[in-house]
Length: 355
Length: 178
Image (cartoon, rainbow over all chains, first blue to last red; front, top):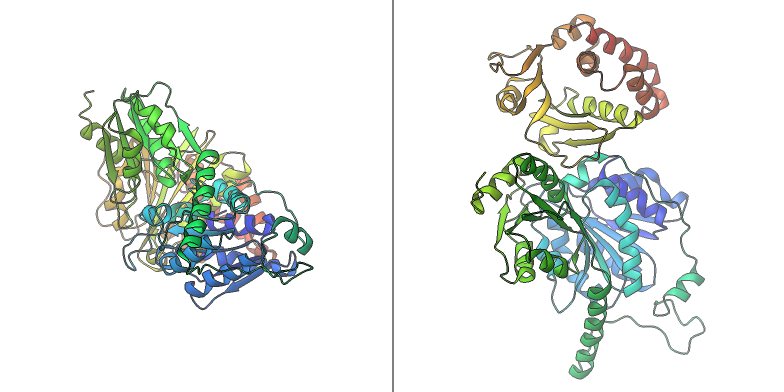
């Protein structure tokens, strides 16, 4: 099935309570598949096509405040519209899953695949000091698996998680093993898991209130410190990455999502020409695998960061490498998908590799 | 075994469906498969293409620039993809509407008169299955029986009466090549 379809199936199977979204290519199959599967008749999951992305993210904000597992999905321009809501959800320490199946920008741009929302996702697209846990799927299987992983992490740390995908992974079809069905949580289970949930008094003396406004600066600084403490813990515990043929590598590709797949083919081509290159694929874009890249930077002759953008993740790789090895960038944008051969040629020319 | 295939032609010729049916049959045979379409405006007229990879090993890139087999169904696609067939690979083309023939000599070039055959058969919807029959005769990467099994599994019951027609089209396609 398609990556977008896998997300819909995985959401129902995880026991998600609600999906709110607005159609946009190349992710409309998420909403379409949910409408087709009619989970409101089986698990009771709400599926709602909102009037806009702004409405969708605020429905998510409301749903998440009650401790329910709610999500939305969109593509680049739609995710830009959601940024205010995402900042509020992060400030409110509310678990939720936001999916961005990226297309080329800026502006309304193109409907073809891109990875140019890296900065927006990992550096805080909305205002204020906040972070999202950002997972980057590279296959249809990842699309299915990371829905559950994203929600698990979001609830564990009470923070929104984002699945940063792209038009290739969303539209391609591959084999997939779907996660097992689990029932939606009962109200009692939610109350136990989420004592902060806004559900009325329920025997408590005080009502739970979810607000992000705090006019007293000292208290607001405390709120910020509390958020930062959570982010520190996430950075310590949740870094995920994949290494491929790095053991004997003279050169290293760093690439995420679909680009990491293309780089694996590039590695095959380069190695057949005698160029030993490996791949580090960040699975979490935040927290970023800084340590792993730092280690590899001590023993490779150069790092090529391949991205479908004008150079975004390359900044984080340079910070990790700290000048120990040269870091170059290869990118295509505007919806152009590079082919594996182009990446090899870029490696050879940028590092003047003699064959 | 890895077969890296591109099928490319006009939107509406059944390019994406043909790729999907092939990929699904590969899946039923226990192969690793990937199906990467061009999506968007091309699907609705203009050129459309799909990259299908069948392999007994995990598949790396779903996007390629060199193909073992290119199935080419219009002039624009021939102009664009002839140079992307691997040396020693195969270019299958439908001569209908082609005014500049393939020129490479380091690949196998196979002409399949699928449009002509389809028109003669009177069943215009059989076009892509005739091509698939020819492709599978040349490269039996999956069996026609598996393709039919795949159709039985994926087509809604109300379309099952079309399966014998599809089987006949595959068989007819196989007779168009040696």
